[in-house]
Image (tube, rainbow, N blue to C red; front, side, top):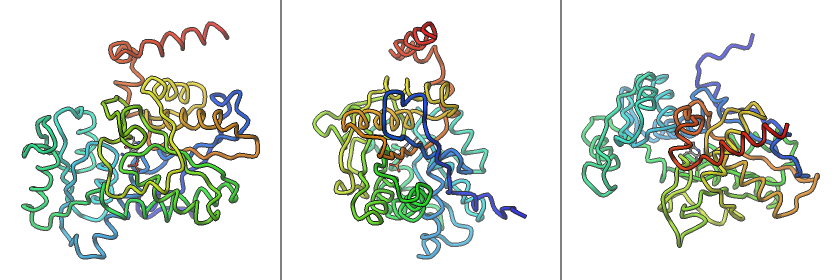
Length: 332
Ligand code: PMP
């Protein structure tokens, strides 16, 4: 019988699937690693499990302890899931701008959600500062601090990297991912470079306005979970061989194409990663001997009121996506 004893036993071992439609005109094989197959629905389940394992080993988290983290999204879900399975409390501090659906997901897993005003990071009421104070005040409080916790990259070094190498029979030539905390890129790149004697190239797809590829021109953008306005503590630039910039418009248009044409309902950072991979395949004139693996962090279900909502696209200046989609239908 094949029966998991805990839902957290199902973290990792996500599948690879080859793209055929959005890759028209490209000779290289483009394969995506679909992280929404994780039980919490994203790549962040991997880091949650390893961060909590390490905290237990190091005595930072004791039975009945409380995990406190400033997060609204996927890391919160991963941590809430692992916390629940192991009997910890989870408290997530989110700014007001995080929508009620996302708060409800965290509460559904049994977490407590604390909402703070939308203020600058150094304001004492900011979600960063409130989470620091809560982690100190709550007896048995533990703050994973994902931007500085080396167990994040370590989880990808031990799982994501080896899975890609195994599932491509060591034929992978390029790895493409977006970067937020950078955990995915750092851990996976390190493993793939080690095992291939440096042959695998690691390429970052980065939003226009993010510090990693545009340190001179940091500004806001709409795609969620990727790009930063500061360098995370776990970032090591030597593990990234190059960057391709992707605009919000390109990212969202590709997310919608992936769901309509490839049957992959994925989020904006996934669309961004694929758009970046296609730019690279063209610019670097990759051939049929190249095998590009692109990591897709989460599902499109969390973006029904944004990327997959036509009114939202119009209202936010992305009407061109809708016009292009109509024109493409007309051509059929
Ligand atoms: N996409 C989404 C939707 C995310 O939530 C994250 C995590 N911030 C990423 C991509 C980037 O992953 P990482 O933090 O490992 O760089």
